[in-house]
Length: 153
Image 1 (cartoon, helix red, strand yellow):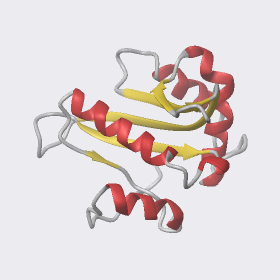
Image 2: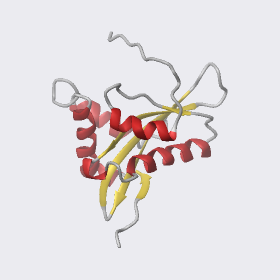
Image 3: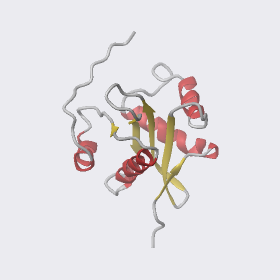
Image 4: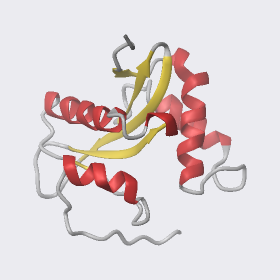
């Protein structure tokens, strides 16, 4: 019998196992390498998970002592709600775990965390070419209909 999947907050000792997941996520979106995602960003991101002042959180999916996925999320104010809303910023699973409920479990864990702290909404965005992930997203959330615009400054 295989060990049950566990979703839990990251701890400081997870860095060596979390880092390959983070690198895999960034490579998936073309942000890997020293020219596009400096190491100081990785280290700043990691340190935010352990800073009580920061609204940034991280959880991992673990089975048999191996990390299979990560999810990072943050809370922010809104002009249309009183309670902060939850933005699921990063979601990634190792390829071998895809289609096996790991991504769904990570999303559901964010839902539970957001609900526990009184947040009325969780939202995220994905790239239009990420069709595999969108099959899951279509099952666990509603499309908002909004498009994202941005400008690098």
